[in-house]
Image 1 (cartoon, helix red, strand yellow):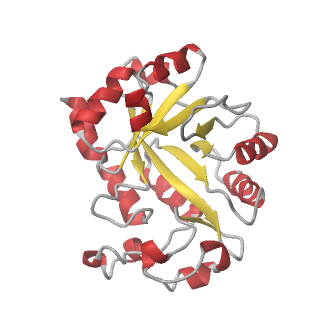
Image 2: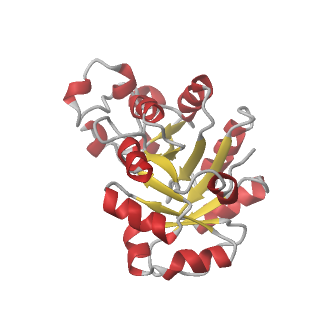
Length: 254
């Protein structure tokens, strides 16, 4: 069963907490190690980015290239999964050297396996990264993959209106999240959730209430400090995305 704001607010007075690329304050972003840590820290959800490799695998990676995360050269879209698996994605975390779950780029199925094995009821916030030279093949591959993993609670997110339209053509039931930068414009058709940077909500505090009145949930990113967490919770946001799930959960518990 999918969790709605009404469902969880009956027993909890704070937003859901999503681990931003995993609990990545001290671990490589998008690594299985970071997502495993997010489970330990009590995250309600995982937020992550998807890209297609040159040979058609869905991998967890934010940037177009691997330079920042591995120190190597090349775009994810131009490398095969085997080539990506030769790189060390704990490049910025030398203390993680020797830990395969920190070093290796995960596929989507690697992460889904971790979720299922955990036995936790985790919400999955899947961002389809665009622009991509593969165009709608990214959404098609995602749809094909998720069909093999029934029962998971997931939403599909993107800045790209075209990507959301493509997904809605494949699947009419999955909740869709439109991630937007300012200025705010009319949401794409079929979207149920709006997501924006936290500074937009701070500068436009009426946005959350107006969005709820219009029938939308509101997510925000990236919330890493107690003061900001309390502020957006007071505004009534439905979910916060954070690099520090444990710290934000402790803030809400206080």
